[in-house]
Image 1 (cartoon, rainbow, N blue to C red):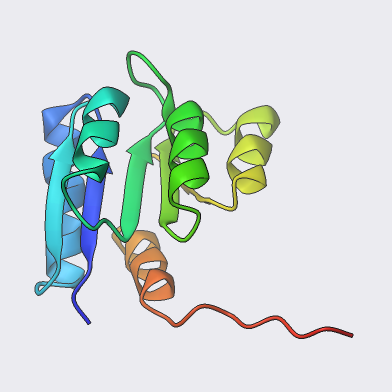
Image 2 (image 1 turned 90 degrees about the horizontal axis):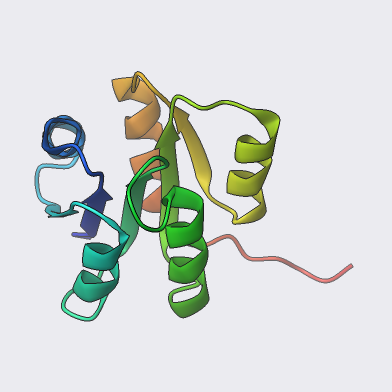
Length: 128
């Protein structure tokens, strides 16, 4: 099934790098880009986005804030946050949002595993 991924990063070079990884792993998927959280929120209304890969350090809302707002309006979206900031508070904030933590520099195989996990059917939980 084809998916739409949004890559949110204020660095055009970083967006191009992530786009390249995605399209090497999933060439049939659609990749759209946003330079900041404001563009992310705007594009949410324009596209059926399934996956968001968001940089942590951006002007305006940082990656955690953007992911939190995204999670409120689209709880089903698969989110990964990319950052070189591996402080416990940042990583725990990412995990609290049920998002994936991807450290910089990006590892192409790690991105591939995230994309594959986002392509699986949702897990079913059963009562005890």
